[in-house]
Structure formats: structure tokens, C-alpha cells
Length: 239
Image (cartoon, rainbow, N blue to C red; front, side, top):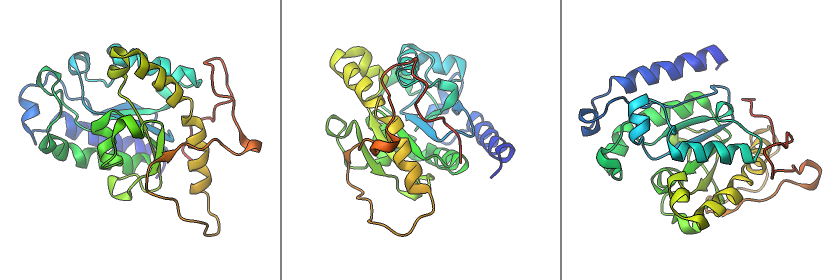
């Protein structure tokens, strides 16, 4: 898929999301929130659902949690414009309650089609509802900072999932915020690993589908990750 084709596909999905009445959430929304970002990115961040500010503006992660996500991205030298950001439900649940299973199911085709269009190498899950889509059965307290091969049925045909806490949880709990900075520092290494697996090679050992700690890149490709000023994190492109 070319860049114009990918952009057109994402906008077509966004138009459907804006007009969607497939679940009860449409009745209380101000605006739906399809998602936004670079259509050629290799990394997609998936949260759980829009909050108050997102509902008003129709954009994902624009409140305090979004501010923290921007800081987390800057920690590895990336910007929000370098990635694609969306949620498992595209309309705000009333009073910021948890999204219900039927609401997640109603939005699932939109997320699947977005991932099919984007073809990411890495899907970063933000929070337990997003994680449940890509790492079913995992507990976020144990799975954050770990990697699992994504089921192609999600729409991401050849990708790794990397679990993180939701930024809103990090805002409430300093220990989770510290964990989040440590976790995001591993994402560029996960991207390098995903790139290697996507390259045409002779068949090698199968990758376990169970969560496992994110492995650092091999010495010859190791990246320095810790600071926002560091420009050695892998450039985000769709290859």
C-alpha cells in the first residue's frame, strides 16, 4: 500500500467512526476520536478510550495523560507526530467509566482496519483494556515491559505487542510513572527486533506467544535510549 493509499484508507475509517452509531456510546459523545498520527509509522500506541478533553476536541490523548505520553515519547527522542495514536473504543464512556465488552467489540473492526492499513512493526498497548486485545489473559502488573507476538487477526499482520501502563495510571501513582519511563526506554529496542523479524530470512526458531521481557538489541545494533536529546533511537518509517 502506498502512502496516499494508506492515508486515504485511514481517513475513510475515520469518517465512518465519526458517523458510527454501532453502540450506546454514540448517544453521549460530543465527538468521536478515530486516532491520528503518521500514516507511515512503524509504531502504533493503543489506549482504552477518549476522556473529557478528547471528547471535546476529537483527538486522542490531549489531556494530562496525553501530556505525559508526549514526555514519554520525548524520553526516547520521538514525537507524537512520529507515531499513530488511537484507542480500543473511539467514543468516550460516560464519566470515564471502563469500556464494556460489547462497546470494545463494536469498535474492534475499526481498530482492525486501522492496523491493516498501517501495518505496524510494534503495537504499544496503554492500559489493561488495550493489553487484553493484544495479550489476552495477561495481567498488566506482570506484563508491562514485556513483548508478545501479535495475533494477525487483530489486523497487525506481522508485529510485536509491547505492554505499558496507561499514562493516567502513571499520573496517579509515582511508582507506575517510574515504571513507564523504564518501559518506554525499551520500545526502540523492540522496534529493532521487530524489524529483524519482518525482514525476509531463512526460517528460524519460532517466537513464543507468551509474554517475555523485552530483549536488548544485539551489541552491534545497540542504541543509546535514555535522553530526549539523543537522536540515535531508530527512525520511524514504514519499510
